Every structure is written in C-alpha cells, then in structure tokens.
Image (cartoon, rainbow, N blue to C red; front, top):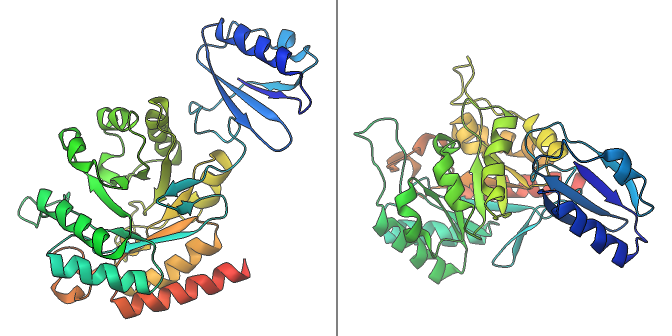
Length: 332
C-alpha cells in the first residue's frame, strides 16, 4: 500500500499517522519528494482500512500495490535512486562507463588496461577475479590473487573496482571491493542475495539469461529487504532461439525497468552480442534508450585473452565507442 501525504502536512499529524501505521504490524518506508511525501507500507496490509486513511486531511492519495516487488517499486520511491561510488554517481541523470577485462590475468595486464580505459573515458574498472565458466576445464580466474591485483590497479589509477562474487563464503574477501557484481548465473542465489542485503556496498545485479524482468526485480527486492538500497540493475542479454549472437539484448528492458523501478539501469553490450564489432551499435542503442551507464569488456590483446577475447574491445576501439556514446548523450 502507498500513501501520498500532502506537501503542507502538519508534522505532528504525520508523526501520529506513522505511529499508527507501525502499530498495524507493517514496515513504513518514507520517500521525500519535492512536492510530496510518499509512505510505502510493506507487510500484510489487507486489514488496513483504505477509506479511513484517505479520509485524513493530510493524506492526498491511497493505493494498493499489485506487484510483488515493493521496495524497488517506483510507486514507493518516485525519485530516481542515485548510487554514489567513490564520488562517481550512477542514476538520476548521471551516466557512468565501467570498463576492463573479462578476467584479471596479471598485474601488468590489469594495470595497463586500467590506465587505458581511464584515459579514454571510463570512471570505474571491471575485472573478474572469480570466473563462472560453463566448462570446468576453462580458466576460472586468479581468485584471491586476482582481487589483490585489482586493488593494485585501483591504487595506481584511483578507479573504483567492480568484480563478481561467486559464493556466500567469499563475502569477507570483498571487503575492499567498491561494487560487488552478482552475475547472471547467481541472480536467483537467494541466500547470497540475503547476505548482500546486510552490506551497504553497491550491488550490480545482472539479469539471468532466462529470467523475466519481474524475476530480476524480485531478486533486487531480496537485497533491499535486507537493508541495502544500493542496487544497480544490469541488462546483459537473454537467451533466445537466435544463434547469430551470444545473447539477445533486450533493449525494451531499459524503459520498462525504469518505469517500474527507481533503481539505475546499466547495459552490458559485450555479453549481449558476444562479438566485438557489435559492442558499439549495442552501446549506442542502450544509451539512446535511456540507460544510466554501460559495462564494457576491454583487453589490450583480445586475441590472446584467457576469457571472452572475441567480445573484448582494444583500448583504441573502446575510445571510439566512448566518443560515439557521448555524441548520442548530447543529442538526447
């Protein structure tokens, strides 16, 4: 249930209403806007009399929410959520590009790429330390050592780091990571999501390759229900019957997610197409559709990358993509 309180509401009356609502065994979430205040009620609201509440002179409107996701719902929180990562803001008109290699391979590799992507327009560095791979024989990442090298790259460049967590048992290892990424395969790892809800770190939540937008939002609900509101949604392409690309980028997900939720939405054009030459057009489409940012794979030697070389851009190619993206942003 959502209550919209009038802008000139008496503070004493508002406090009284809040106390009464909490006495009904529901959680009350406040969202302060420019013109009004929204109270979101989470819990069993079936016993609460809507007519009684709407009759109060400080209440402008009352409505029930039919969607199962409550906290991430834009009806609860009309204003865009803005995530601040070491001074770099995402959402609410703030656009960020995250770039770096699929996986960390060596100190020289990650530090070199970090300097290149920073020079060419990225403000945040991505890099996989733990790598979920379909084949058990494929490169699984440098694990703890990879995290140390990411932190070394951060030390040299000042760039906040984004890397994927694989398992609940790894959480303590991510104490110095700036954005914890939950990959597509873990989108519905609910025990992991619950634990991340107890953290205050920004969480980059990727859509599963066969999941609906409602399922993505429900996964975000798990995190926010635990108390962590710092969530960034990521559309990275879904599995369809099409074989020409690695995945199919769901461009429509961007406006739909932004309509349904207040959380920022970024797009991964690298995993979507799975081919380097498709990254630029997909990045431009995502930008034009209203994405709050991009996460792009960049490697200094894609032909010899240990992971996802075919979809990785060279630093020079990345620079051209950033120029094109900035041109689209100026137009829109």
